[in-house]
Structure formats: C-alpha cells, structure tokens
Image (cartoon, rainbow, N blue to C red):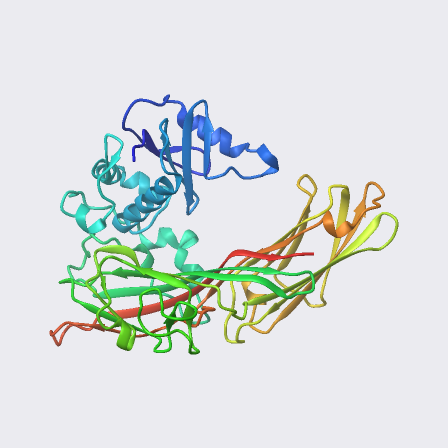
Amino acid sequence: MMISQFFVLSQRGDNIVFRDYRAEVPKGSTETFFRKVKFWKEDGNAEAPPIFNVDGVNYFHVKVVGLYFVATTRVNVSPSLVLELLQRIARVIKDYLGVLNEDSFRKNFVLVYELLDEVIDFGYVQTTSTEVLKSYVFNEPIVIAPARLQPIDPAAIFTQGAKRMPGTAVTKSVVANDPSGRRREEIFVDIIEKISVTFSSSGYILTSEIDGTIQMKSYLSGNPEIRIALNEDLNIGRGGRSVYDYRSSSGSGVILDDCNFHESVRLDSFDSDRTLSLVPPDGEFPVMNYRMTQEFKPPFHVNTLIEEAGRLKAEVIIKIRAEFPSDIIANTIAVQMPLPNFTSRASFELEPGAAGQKTDFKETSKMLEWNLKKASIVGGAEHTLRAKLTFSQEFHGNITKEAGPVSMTFTIPMYNVSKLQVKYLQIAKKSSSYNPYRWVRYVTQANSYVARI
C-alpha cells in the first residue's frame, strides 16, 4: 500500500500537520479536500463519504474528535486498508500525546512529525505499533495541563452518578515521565459495544446486531503477564462447534457469532475456563473484537406514527422508552426524522413537565430534530413528542412513504447489551508492593438505530 500525502485539518480547515511523501499530488490538496467536504451535496447526501476522487486524486479521511485525518494517492489502493491506517495513526498519536486535540498537536508538532516519519517512509507503511515506535522515537511529549482539558475531556461522557472514570485513563501518555518521579501502576479495560437495530412501524425488531470490542490500555511497569476471565457461559458460534472449535454453543448464556483476538493473546485455557492470557503491549489496543446477532433486549424501544390531520396537515408521534435499569443514566439522545419535501412548518408538543429537551425543524433539509439531555434519560423512563406538520401543497399518495425513518444516536455508560463481562483481571507480579489500579468500563453506543414508519 502506498500513499502520497498525509495531513490533519481542524474543523475550520486549518492545516495542523502536513507531510508530502512522494510529490505526486498538487500542494493545494488540503484546500481542495476541505472545500469538497464542507460543501458536499452530491447524490442528495449532506455529508461527504470517507472516500472520493477529485481530478484523479483519491482522498481518504476519517474524523476523530473533530479533526480530519486525511490521506491522498493517485494509485488504486485498498480503501479499507487506508481507512484502518488513518485510525491507527490517530491511535498512535493519542498514545504519545495522551489526548488528541488541536492544542496538543500544535504543542507537540516536532514529536508528531517524528512519529509520522517512522510510521510512513516514502509513502509506504513501516509500523503502527506503539511498542515498536518507542525504540525509534525519542522526543518527550508536552503534556497539556488537566485544567485546560475540562471543556473537551472525553472522560466526561462516561460519568455515571457519583462515579467518574479516572482522568488519567484518557489523558495520560505512554511515554511521558511523571513530574513526581513516581509511576502510577494502572491498567484500563473498556468493553465498548455499538448496536444496530431496525424496528418495524409497529415496534417489532426486524434486525439487530452488536459489534463489540474489549479495549485495553496498560501503564504497568515490567510488562507483566495478565489473565482476563470472561463469562463462563460464553459460547462462540451459533450451533454445532464454535468457530474456534472450542466447546458446543448449543447451551444458553452469552452467544457470540464470531470473534478475533489481538496477536498478543494466548488461548491456551480459553476452552476450559474462558480466560485470556497476554503480555499487553504499550498503548491502546483491542484485546478482542466480537459480533453478536442473537436476539437481545435493545436499550430503547421506539414507536413512530404519522397520519393525516386535514387537507394540508399531518401529525407525527414519536415515543421512546428506556429499557435499561433505573440506576443507569444515558447521555444525550439525538433523534432525527426526515419529513415530506412539501413540509413548510412544524410545531412541537412535549409531555407536561418535560425538562432538558429541545426540538427543531430544519426547513432546508426538511428534518425533524429532537434532543434529550442526560438528566431526563433514566432507565425505565418514557418520552413522547408530538409534531404538527403543515404542508405547502396537497398530497394524494401514502404519506408514510414520504417520511422517515426515525434514527437515534446515544451513549449509555456503565451498561452493555450483550452481557459480556470481565469477571476478573489477574496480574502475574510477585512484588508485594505492586498493587495497581484496575478499571473496567462498559459503554453502549448507537451504530444504526432506526425505526421505520
């Protein structure tokens, strides 16, 4: 795989990092890319796809914490491979800087360019391993003061009641020295699940899928061996023998369709007691990726109804019910619904006493928007939105074919749908003074959450 350029742009289009490896692409590629992304209107889509071509140049991009990571090339390369490379570059830079934002980039541009020169040589990828790069990269990161991170601290989205994930899990560099000279022994494990659910117009589940990962970030000295125990009733494969030919998956419990493991993971005892053994490399890495299509209880149930209420009027009713326990609080929910093209006005009605909710009608895109803030999204709660639509012309067809579907985005901290759990984490270290801090975090996010009308 070969790329010509790599650059990082801010949301304003400012050039933060730029490296031209082969001098094959015009220098104005950054402006061309940002202008194309900013004003993308092709095929009726409001957002540019991750890959597009302009004047014979292929542009690949991913957006990470508001920054555009972009690669260009004139040759035919694997799109998925380039997109994976961009994600890995972002992860490596985050490992070194501790936090990924525009300020940390600008204060550490020397370190970032040193990393890029080791990761890519003349357009060819050399390595994206944080552990390998530590032997070749010698600049120390300039750590951003914690006080300056508060407005954009990603840890804020994982607050759950009085519990908050330690900030060092997000903002600590794998190579920076502690100012006090002492090393805090820490290891963080995240189980992150992205769910895709499609509801029928009557509220029944048509399709459901979970894409999950067990993510780890280790700051343990001496690289000790770690054992992670998962659910004893975990089965892999739906029927017959599992994909790894372990034990039969015909029983109940957590059933995964398939999974794959990081290269450092050993599966010697996985068959007998569902434990994983590994020596964690430096930086953040996925211990295990898995997929699940077994029927599960979705975190939100969505019902939608649209019906005519007169010659030039219609009414939309959207009802959301939180199906998770009452001690769990979801973060901000965003609900969107495309309305008929001839909709000229929309008025909204919320249930009495509704707080922390905001509605809007985007007339240019004919989009209904409903946002619910964290305080109002407690497990077991139910919320209803009524929207009265006014049309600019009379409609004689089926109105349900002109509207919808309803889509949702959300994040639920300390909750996962699949019920996959880390039962315990053991560290093979003989020193009696070695008592590291362990943290396991569960997160559920919406990947594609859609309700048909």
